[in-house]
Image (tube, rainbow, N blue to C red):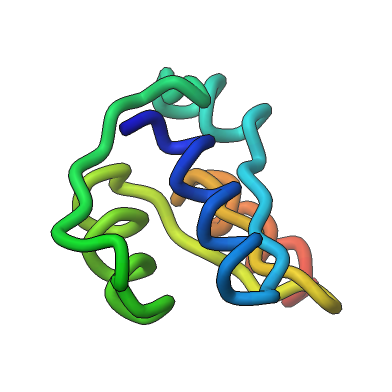
Length: 86
């Protein structure tokens, strides 16, 4: 199933807004919104999604920003953390 479809489904069913940062995902690791991911169950918890899909399959990370969870490349997350520390 494409990652964008999984994110849309999770947003609709959980009430938590999820967003793919396609700029960082594409430029830093070549990920597209059509990247296929494997999910074990339609009843996957948010924690399972973040662990199994985002960190393991996508090799990305997530950041909680205001009222949403943004999925970004590790490089962008590291760059953001460095900028915030300065």
